[in-house]
Image (tube, rainbow over all chains, first blue to last red; front, side, top):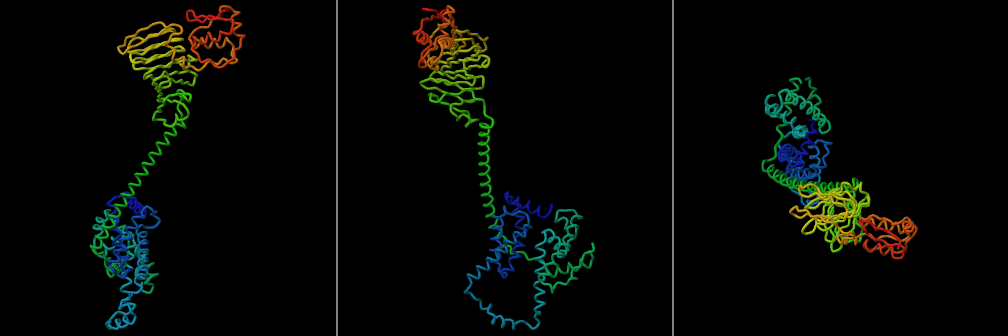
Amino acid sequence: MTDREEDRRRVRALLAGDTAAFDAFFNDYFPRLYRYVLPRVEFSIPDAQDICQETLLRALRRLSTYRGEAALYSWVCQIGANQVSDFWQKRRRDGAHVVFAEDDPNVLAVLATLQSAEADSPESHRYNTEIPRLVQATLDNLPARFADALEWKYLDGLSVADISFRLGVSTAAAQSVLQRARAAFREAFTALGDVAVPDLVSPNALRDPEV
Amino acid sequence: MTAEDDQALEALLRWAGRRPMPPPETATAVYQHARQAWLAQVRRRKLVLRGWAWAAGLGAILMAAWGGAHLYPRQVMATIAPGQAAWIRHTFWHPFAGTRAGELFEGDAVQTGAEGATLERGDGTELRMSRNTHVSFDSASTIRLGRGGLYVQTHDVQSNRNLVVSTDLGNVEHLGTQFLVERGNEAMVTAVRDGRVLVHYLNRPAVELQNGEAASVDPHGQLKRWDLSIFDSVWDWSDALATPLPIEGQSLYAVLTSIAQRSGLVLRFSTPAAEAEARGLALHGAPLALQPRDAMPAVLATTTLTGTTVNREILISAR
């Protein structure tokens, strides 16, 4: 079954009221959505919670309109992006007269002088913050089993046999999933890197695999 | 994939670190809220779907009824002329089919009140219902008489060969042209005016009745039979329901033939001259709404002919 077919099957199950499908939907998509929203609301957990909640409610309400033309996560994520946009529009309107002291440019300049002399250069700071976020965003946009397989393999150090057990497939199939996950990650990360941080992603950082 | 690539990927992922998970309390709060809203939405959706299913089912039933009535119309068992005091109950299976004036279909029932009513079958057979009579059309060939009296006058014996008038005390099988069945409080009475019928009752052998004969069957299965007089009063109510006899422009011969036929009698002339006179004489006037015994003297009154009834015959002769 392809990912789109899997998405459509999941939507049908949700529309039919399958509670197991709801739990799977929530467990798969909420963490990814949260990671997407959190940095966009300046890491405000209550705001991220409100936006994620509203996004999921809207997505569930509109499920019958999902046609499977995009990945289900991308579809949910687009609703989340609209919610973030609404959030900032409202914030600008409501908060027009609220200015935090630390947001004043002069205060910021003073605060900047308090940084240690050993602080990273702007490039290295950007490198240290942007690249991990890009890696995580790339993982979040891969099919869930690809991202999980890569984390299990490279962060948790699981064997292929263990990964196959967690995925519920044969060892050969797990090997295939890993192989495709690596290829998908490399392709997506390189493309994203070229657009987002072209000077920070080395073209040789991930060479073509020779599997 | 080379080991070097594998190590580079591992290093990149390790440097980026594990994707952060939302705080458990946040996940729990969002989960509970989203799940509650989703369940309410599913319930609403199911209610709507159920409503549509009911509506679709109802629509299908109506379409089927409409289709059954209009695309595959059933055979009309009889028609009842408008203006007659009768109540019609249409069967469930074709609720719309009988809405056209007075058409009765298989399964339909008719009930008369203080006055009788006249029905007509497709082949011209006349069905006269006495007052307080209940009749239902079980099939094309079976008429169930619940109570009251039913008079049958056919013009085409062959097409009605299988016609049966059925009561709880027995069945009367039609073999002739005019007969009457009454289901009173005490018994089923059958009278034959013309032709013959077979009376089936209990498990006894069928009894054949000829014209001029009558029989009754009581609830104990006792059968009594007797002879009828030529203008017996048993026919009075059915004759009262007969359509008036048209005479305008008709020959005397044609009118006498109709009277004889309605009476179950044979028309005879004493001489060829008498017959020739009857054939050559044209009548004028309004339709005759008279009993047959009164109609004959009425039409002969202004002629040189006279009539007598002897041995189930009407004999016309010169005065």
